[in-house]
Length: 150
Image (cartoon, rainbow, N blue to C red; front, side, top):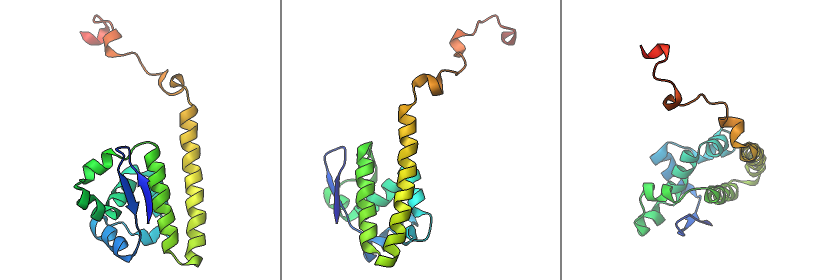
């Protein structure tokens, strides 16, 4: 069981076992066993909605006991919380698998996380003019007597 704390100050415990894997598969159609052979790590790293859905289903018994809906859970999943929760999930997944699969999953996980962090770092270093400075003028600055207005 690996804990993380959401932006609302609630502590959640991520647990991966056979029951949890079945629950995620039944509710979301996501197979956590694909972490070793499939594209699950890419999906989790690239789509925060899938990541949060998986985390919610893994924490569902705890969420039910706390009276927290999936929407409330999702509201608490922002910024660094996503990194912390993702790390908790990855550690649980790695602990679940036998050692032969463990190494393969670990390599894939770190490669994908490294790519993801590099992309985020690149976006964080851009200045607003780099991506937004070349946008066309707003409609409010277009003269009313332009040829397209007649």
